[in-house]
Length: 460
Ligand code: FES
Ligand SMILES: [Fe+2]
Image (cartoon, rainbow, N blue to C red):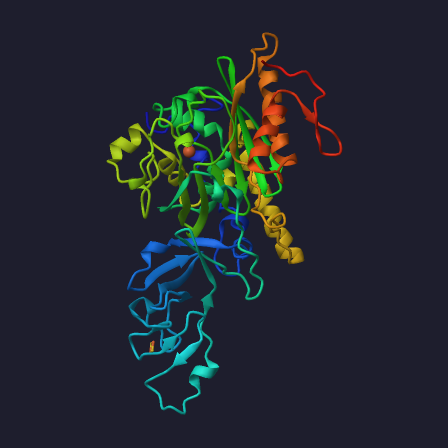
């Protein structure tokens, strides 16, 4: 009946649960001058696939800034403020020159660094080009992706080269996806391993590997680059330890998508390196490489022809699907977009399974505050002459079932591998694999850093 009251203490509380507080602006606002925007701008950020730069300029939006990017006829790439410094026409209609770009409206000619080379509608004596400063950002093209440094001039760090880029026998195929929500909820999905069990396996069926149906033991560690989650699973006599890393402030590496953990392996590397880059505060680009290698996909489930601009070769990343199908089999995209355009932390109820998400937010907050208060940013220092070591990998090795405490045995197995990953980071990949094998079986390292067998080997 109308106006009927419920007496239940907990039920039917919609009327009392309508307020939506504002989002956590410190972590979610990324426009110019915002604390998080300043933080993200202190790192090289990918923003476009290089093969999109053909004979026309491309209008892009990065962290709320409207820009135009082009490759001039000499092959150099320019990233300029989109609106012409003369009277504001968009440079996406500009004419690509041998060097730089010329505005369509009155021909102002810009070099790739924003210098104005000519203002041809003015008398030759005009000094206007000497006093006008047009905004531009430095770029770096690397393996089919263009990165920009959008921080203060002269503070650009060295372009980071991670060890995974040189994985033997792997092809790196660039991709660019967009998702209509805030960057943070897209990024924190990468430190939410519990969603793999539910969204990708149990909720509506197996979306990736069958092995994802096995509940993982989950733990987390700081790494020199950020953090990693450690997921350990039991498959018969084998134990599988997967690590998935965050490279602060907004990159992530993920292991093989269809990993079934049937074969023994140690230190199998990544299937994806990606950055989660705000287009603006309610649209996000996910840019990176898919790695194709026989070891990562022995059953050949990947399809590189689907990897590129606007698409990737696995379900639930925003590919066009009928609405009903997305309801019956939702993916990462549906889960993240439906958290609201900007997820509202004040309405959440974080649980034990959200430890990774909480830790990630805390690390980003710390980074923002260190920059705001002290003007400092952490950048990874590569060891002399080599790439920066990273921490995403899979190890599958025999581990006898411990009838008394198998969860404990699995946990220790995962922890030993994680510790080796960090302690042996400056070793070669072959050495790292070997040390992981030893660590997994209980060998530990002596205090001077040399391996020393102090515990009985648990197999063979
Ligand atoms: S508006 Fe670009 S040259 Fe005039
Ligand atoms: Fe996912």
